[in-house]
Image (cartoon, rainbow, N blue to C red; front, side, top):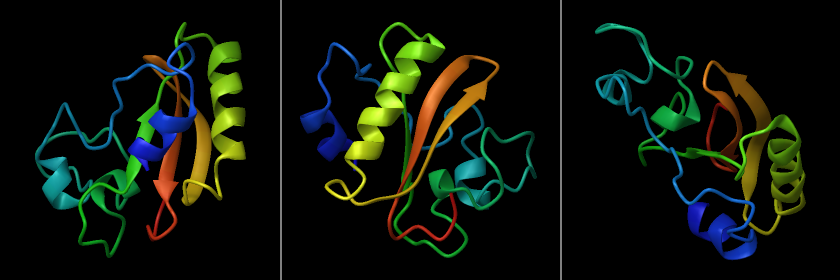
Length: 113
């Protein structure tokens, strides 16, 4: 998923750092987002944690647009939407967090979002 996107989206639009798993509370990666050891960045059974029944590890990525504005992120999300079949995406959504905007993309095979 990440390799496909990086090969098709120009680096002038896409920040090369991609977030696939929990960075702040790494224990959430093992509990599938159950906040047993503090808050998790993603929802319970998120594809960032492999979904509800995944065994392959992270099956989602958050992509960020260069510039970080809503307009740039919207442009990136539209380009990602156009790649949905070619890169075998499942769920795709432009999201806003306290840190700004990003576009969440899951694999076709993930059971969640």
